Structures are given as structure tokens and as C-alpha cells.
Length: 167
Image 1 (cartoon, rainbow, N blue to C red):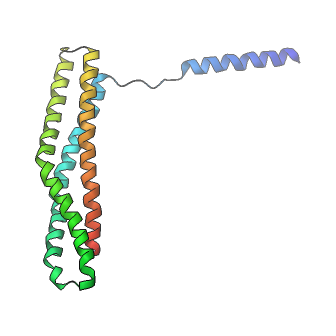
Image 2 (cartoon, rainbow, N blue to C red):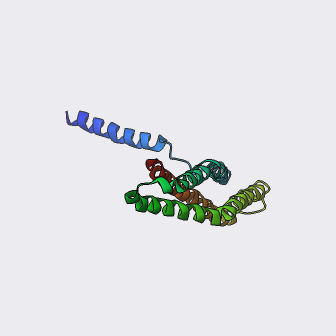
């Protein structure tokens, strides 16, 4: 009986080593794959920016103008609430107008930088460590731009809901 237990124990231990040695470890994406993923993020952000400018910005601006023009017909006790919501919407609209050209230019620049980095990588013009440095910088830049777009989308969405509630 002891021999059977020892044999079973040895088989179990052997099986554990055999199976753990065969498991697939997650592979690290290649520099080309990492670059393609970041390029896709920037491309998606460019589309998101264009949609945001054409839709969210225009919708909030139109709502702002409409509600501002209707202030004369608002009950006196509601005027303060209207002004607060309009002032907040105006602040976000103005903030976006101040950065929109810069934001668009930075998105275009980021796309160009990634295209250039891809060219350098494909033509072996840079080594892995230099690629890592440039890639890290471009990732930070792309993430910053992505977060700016999310910031405005969130703020405009909140303001739009507030203005819609005034109808």
C-alpha cells in the first residue's frame, strides 16, 4: 500500500512539472505590434476628435445659443439656475476653442511621428533600446491627447444633459 501511495505521489509531482513546463507563457508583443497598436489608438483618437468637433461641440454650442436666446421667457426664479448652467457650458466651449487647433495639430504630429518611427524600425535605422525610448515618448504623448479628448467629451456630455434638462 505504501508503494502505491509513493508511486501515485511521484506520478502527481511528475505530472505537475510536465504540465507547467508545457504551458504557454504570454508572449511580449514585438516592437512592430506595439507600434501598430499605438498607431491604431492615434487613428481612433483622430476619428473621435473629428466626431467630437462635428457633433458634441456643435450640439452643445447650438443648445447654448438656443437657451441663451430664450432667457427672456424664463421665470425669474429660474434665471439664476439657467445662468449657472450656461456659464459652465460657455466656459467649456471657450476652453475647447482655445485648444482645438493645438489638439488637432498634436494629433496629426503624433501620427507623423509614429509613421516615421515605423519607417525607422522597418529599415533597421534604430536599435531596440532607442526604439523603446522613442516609443515611450510617443505613448505618453498619445495617452495625453487621448485623455484630453475624453476630458472634453465628458464635460460636454455633462453640460449637454444639464442644458437638455432646461427645455
